[in-house]
Image 1 (cartoon, rainbow, N blue to C red):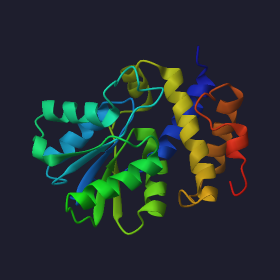
Image 2 (tube, rainbow, N blue to C red):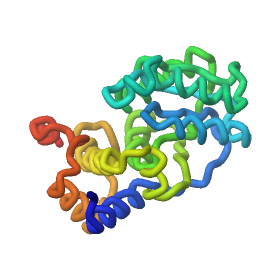
Image 3 (cartoon, helix red, strand yellow):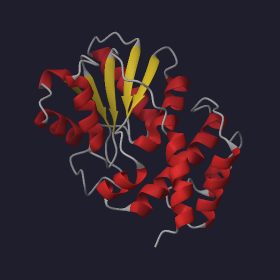
Image 4 (tube, rainbow, N blue to C red):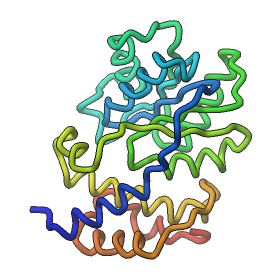
Length: 224
């Protein structure tokens, strides 16, 4: 049973993670691999709206996705996009990345190999990964403009869709931890995190929503 306080705190973090960028045409759309096929749905919709001439789906598998996406996140995303009418010629695959840093690094290489000149990226992710992904792009691919996108649904609707509210809240908490520590690792730019967001994060940690946190010895490494 998830308490009313935990839902309120999770909602606060959910709203903080979302950037509310207005989609606009970019050089390429990049769908960041995860357990959520909705990322592929949003990417396909944006392609159909003319927001990007080419898509890169990036991602291998993780403990969360191995059973759901045995052929790899990027491959399953591509299959969904083709089902939704995106032509095969418009989709590039990056099937090796196992974290967001690799998503960015390997996607740059895939686009360069394909001869795509990139000045802007439409970055599609899960809703609660917008802010962290944006901050990492600003650090690791600083020369491109970044426009973030995700499904527009609210937290409760999203958890109903995924079918595991505790897992989603755990992930929301883990994403906030990375917003806090990644700048110290030179993986992301610094961002303002309001005190009420930090307090909500700390309450959720105390309440046990910790399965997606970095281990204490990793999170506390020098420079974090």
